[in-house]
Each structure stands twice: as C-alpha cells, then as structure tokens.
Image 1 (cartoon, rainbow, N blue to C red):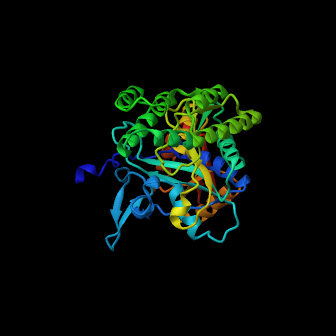
Image 2 (image 1 turned 30 degrees about the horizontal axis):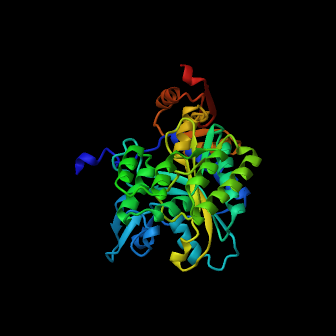
Image 3 (image 1 turned 60 degrees about the vertical axis):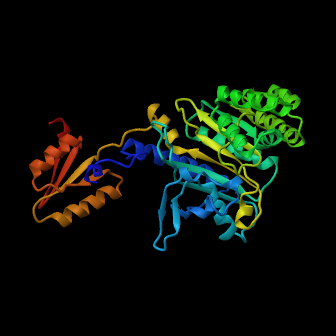
Length: 405
C-alpha cells in the first residue's frame, strides 16, 4: 500500500492557493446572497446512514447504490459519504425543524461524494452551495428559485449563462403511457438524460408505434422558446402533461418579464437522475465550463418519506465549476506575499512577536521569521519577494527591498 502514499484517491484532488481563494470567494458571494434573501445556513454530516438514500426510501426517491461511497460504523451499520445535499436537508427539516414556521428557507455549502465511473476528468468530490425552500407550493416559489439561481450566477461574475427549464410531469405522463416494462422505461429515462438519441430511437423502434412512443421520440428535440410548448401540446395529450406545459408557459413568461428571456430556454427533454423531482426541473450552464453548474427542481413527495409531507423546491450550484471559470478568466488575484518579515535577534523573540502583533493590528501583512540567522532570513525574504525585514533586538533595524538584492 506504500505506493499510494504520495497520491490522492482516484476522483479526488488537492486544492492549492488560487483554487482555495476562488472557492472561498464564490462561497462567500453565494452565502451573502442567500442570507440577504432570507435563507439560514445548515450543515449536515459528511456521513449518513445509507437508509436515507436508498433501502428504506421508495424506489422513486432512491439513489443508485453503485454511485455512493460506503463504509460501516462500529456496530456494522452501513454508512455513505454524503452523495446528495437535498435528501439530508429533507431529513433534517422533517425531524429537527418539525416545529419551525413554514416555509423553511435553508442554504448550505458543503461537499458531496459520488462515483463518476468512466467520466475522465470528473471529480468524485464536488463542493456545492444551494438553497431549499420547504413548505411552499406553487408557481411563485418555482419562479423565485429559478430567478435566484440566475442572480447567483450573476453575483459570481458569470454573465454569460443559460438556464434550461422543463417539467417532470411531461416525461412522467408519456413514459407511463408507453407499452413497456419498468426496465425499458428506466432505460429510456437514461437515454434521454444522456441525449443518446440514436440509441433511444433504436429502443423505441422495438415498441408498439403509439402516440406516446412518437412523443417520447420527439421529446429530446423540444427545445427553445414558447413555440416549443405549442408543438408539445399537440404531442402530449395527457392531462398531467397538459397541466405541466401550462405551468411552464406561465413560468417562462414570468421569467421573461424579469429580463431573463435571453438566458432561459425550455427543454422538454430535461429529465433528472434524481427521481424525487416531481414538478419543474431546471439546469444552468456557464460559458467556459462543460459541467452542469446549476441543478434543481421541485420535489413535493420527498419529505413524506421522512414522515412530514411538505412541498419543496430548491437548487444546488457546482461551486468547483464556477471557480474554475473564475480562475480561467483571471478574476482571482494570486495571494500577495507578506509585506514584512519580522526577525528576532537572539533573546528577543518575545519583543519580535509583540512587534508582529502591533504590525498586523495596523493591517499590515506580516510573517514571523523562524530561521536561525538574519542572513538566512534576508535570503528567504528575497525568494518570497517580501519587501522589508524588521530585525528586532536592542534596536529595530529595517532592511528595505530585499527582494531586489
């Protein structure tokens, strides 16, 4: 096992310097926005019982077991590293916050851990920030969430973005109208999500040629503005689908009135691997990143699994993707070296530390010299581009511009 001492686990990575600055900046911007909008921060454990994500939850809310990092506690109970943020917050709200007035507004900033097999370059550890609005049904809550996700991207300096909106009710209506077994329906779901149109067509060719099959075949290509909804109304005749399309129409018009007509598009082929979504679904993308940056939607049945039926809607932001773009666009200033190195002459360490406190109290960026000699300290300061060395002893000696020596 010694061969692994010098490397990180597959799917994980170290963050250095500007990476850390970028993440802290994005996290700070998002937390500030969420708090100004009335959301309170919560943190959930990095480990949860697997029951919360799979075995004790109905199939329509379960996460794939193969996607989770697993371990056991001292009693042999199966745990997972947190693979999702919404489910733990649903658990927390249904238990710890059961007496809180509704709606409950929560936000988070924490990692999730998921296997991404076969996806080269994708990290299994992803830092997310997001919000959950729990106990609020209806279009107002949906509109707020999508508009807030757009504002979050703007606040992070990513003006060139797009948000795609869909509705779980459209796909749900069509898939349950198909003459197909559950395994075939799940395969269709996966093919639409991955936009594997050729494979989807081959699979649908093996099914009876019904209106529902023809609509499913067309669904991934229903993308655009309100004209998309007009075509969809002729293809999707079920009541659930018609209601979902009407909901999307009103939502699209409201978002356009907010000035988001250029950023928001309708995508009726938008289906989500998180099976707990029940209503509007949305995703966000930014220029310079191939990742999905925003992922969210309505999940009105999830809290029922924890004994407290409440409507809810929310979204998560891939902060790592945003910070990579921020760095690529030069929006993160590298950390500056200290202005002053405080060196203690022999026997004057206490005075030097007091001088350090005095200077940092004035807002100066300082470092305490830990090398044994003044010569070594001056050479170190030159390599670090520290402009002054304060040598503290019986008198204070200041060495200027040592970085140029």
